[in-house]
Length: 149
Image (cartoon, rainbow, N blue to C red; front, top):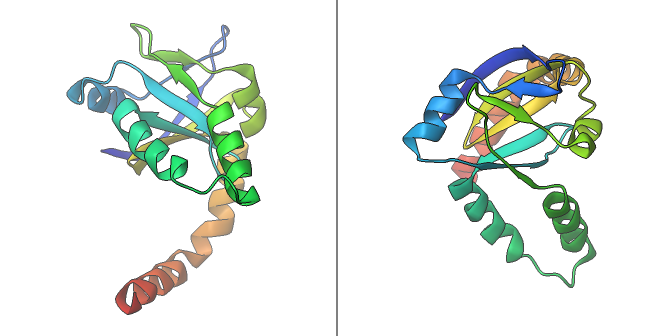
């Protein structure tokens, strides 16, 4: 579905262009709108409408009697905005989402299989530099867990 890293700059009117490869996926899936919300690690998550419904079902099934579930659902769903691209493939993110992710000018748009993530370029660089050295060890640990699971 969504793969790769793309660097973009917010234009004078505050718009971000979605990479053409990602827009092609939207077209293939007949997705005219998508959902953007607070992600983890100071990024924004972007889901197609179909994937949003899948995620929504998972999160709705969490017990609302547990404080951790209520907190997560409140922050995740209250941050959500349904957005469409204009004819040039640009989107306008709500200010509160840009503030959450620390997005000012330069952004990284990355594909993470079933979702897109939008990062401040600075935050992505920090995250990447911190995570990349342990990539092989993380893969090894995840594969060990999967084999035991």
